[in-house]
Length: 158
Length: 69
Image (cartoon, rainbow over all chains, first blue to last red; front, side, top):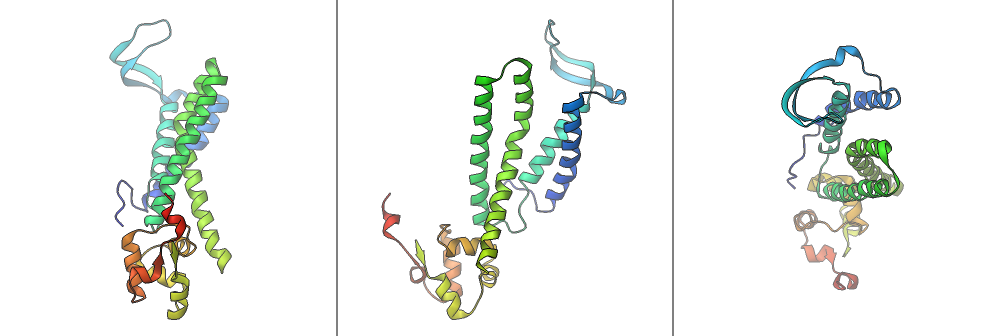
């Protein structure tokens, strides 16, 4: 069966190469929140608004790009891991993929709904930040778990 | 949906892995179909029946529960 919108199997490795440094840097950034000076650079900004300031559009500004790098590594890495074909991507695997995607979206928004109700102020900001990534994490976790389960089923029969 | 893939495999003396290779799907797929855990596509049903030189209806059969929708 022809499966659309997926990357070739080999791309998954590149996903892990991006994702692992992303998760390590991200972890330290969450704990420490220190930003190395050499990452202070001038960036082009389409829109930004500092606290108590007006919105400014299409300007150059100074920014530490550590969080940008972490965000891109995590998102691009996780997308490549999640949406590269399996070695044998067939109709059954596609079904597991779809089910896992639905499951991950439910879980991600369930977490967000609970956060909206129970979490406030800056803590809520950090929940939204994490929520950008958790959809992909939940999907990767659930999809691979289902794949392992279906492989285990075969071993149990032998 | 019931199926007689296991019986047909035994008659032809091939494993799930060999059948999977013949119809170009993963082993998990054959396993899930055989256990009735996955309703396969028409194309795959046709391919599997071709391997066993039978029609689709010889190998796959509706169950009463399939009709309660």
